[in-house]
Image (cartoon, rainbow over all chains, first blue to last red; front, side):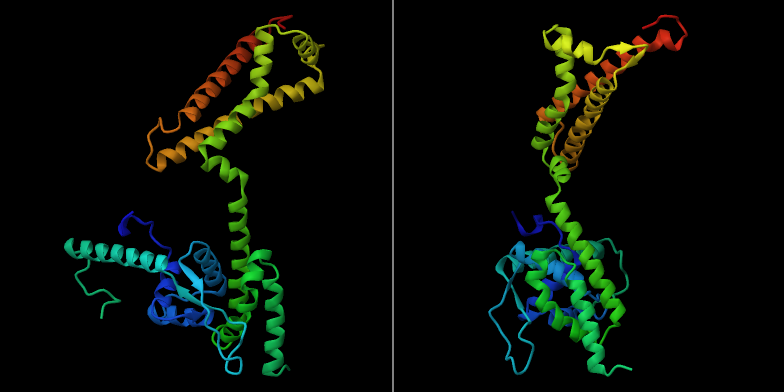
Length: 119
Length: 197
């Protein structure tokens, strides 16, 4: 199956993969990164985050990291997550799909003004 | 009034109660790590918002688990399961029909007694058996039509699942035959013909 033949990711899964693409993070860290990546437009609830993480762990898109924080510095109960190779493939395929759509809308001149996210 | 620490403890205690409502497997896997996330978010979001988000998550996880386990979902998504179930659901009427047509004794005699009418009324047990048997036919038909519909939506051809197709046609034919037979049998009575039974 080529990258473009994958089913589109849900917004929550996409943002979590994007947040984990640069670093291993715990739940709250993922939420903060999603908030920053989307410029505050996506505010994920704990229910959505952990529900999505469960399904992503089950499907192998993310994995629990071995990273543990210093108990003196932070809460030991935190679990860090990392993106897997399958997760990177899925993220790549989704970004390819977005690129294709952006190229298409530019070709069709559907957004004469620069996109809100651009720049 | 509560101090900030006491307030957090009360909020956390309520949050723990909410987490306890998650399905056990989910709770064991994420319950502990959800608590520090909750405490971090407490400084940024209203506690009511977090409770409602978590409550929605609880409902969503239970619904997801139900969907995963759902036999009905399996019947509709798996054409083979729908076909096998369809055969079983259609079996009672088919057997009754075949036994009556081929006059298979002694079962036919037993069925005649079961479905015999007295003063134009069928015995209650016979009526229940007959109604349930007949009701199972459209149910079997719906399962198979749904399986075919799902397969078509997935881009497969109409002949992708011939067993479901044949079964659906057979069931529809049987339902139409029974309906027409019933109308033909009862029509004189509806017209007011005396001793029509």
